[in-house]
Image (cartoon, rainbow, N blue to C red; front, side):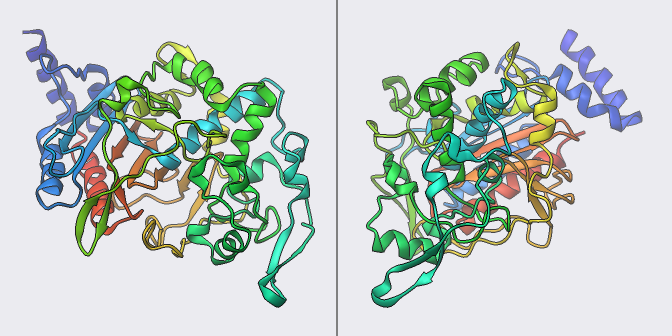
Length: 425
């Protein structure tokens, strides 16, 4: 009877005061199978099931939260195509660059404590950043030509991808330099992978980069702990993120999804797993997690730094992280130089995008229904998240498919996000 009363109250408010409906949904939404659930599950289920049926992805987990609690959580398909193990809501996957927002949160905790300065030279904590040169081209014999940068790299540059670093996947010069110097790949955990030159002077433009990997090294230098130990103590434990870490525990491995690559239109399982004894923990992309755990992080951001009854960040810090922090620079398209790992990448072409402190911000409303100035980013294996402070919701979507922004996987994610907004009261 109580559930029926809630439903009738919600219906009347949604009908006559539609602007109040979202808050009411958040307040009364419950999430166990045996509890009443107001958020419409079936239309969103249908979108994700269609993606599985059409082989857009082998398996997917997806979840949505309000400020008050989970609105939607589901899993469909298989963890490894052809093996028959279901992709359940507690499935663990490599979240890759979704790690960056968590590392950025660790940085901002240390800023709050007065142990880091966003605008001081970052070389105070990572000496290589004071030695790094700007790559101007390649000379005789293909040797790199470099010069000193015009200004020092700051933590703000690192967190906004405006330091001048890049990734080999999306920058031809960095790819060529890595091949000449025989550098290890970024997901190896070897710090040498991040000892590349800059491709422009700090602060001059935006380029998606290894900057937040360096930010993770700085967290270690300042805290005196490994990045994993710091994140566990300062973020994962307070938020109750029990299935998130750089190392796959036995309990996580029992729920681990396999990475797949699309080849000639077919999805093929591949052996791709980050080192479990890495010499260095990768703050830019090394975490494994679940969508449920990641929503605990998203809910903390939606609630101004508080989650699971614990304060992780100050409200003003979250507001600062959620504003443009790179001036007139704008996010640009990332052309691929390694099509096995990524296609050309750009979200919402035609909509100007800026960067906060580890989040991308769309300056106009997105066609999915996402509000202007929402926060978002993604992981290499076609995992995505968004945080919409205006509407008070956020969501996460996890698949394990390469290449990044695979057309079918990305389309399924965008259909999921659109279905979420279409079904808000």
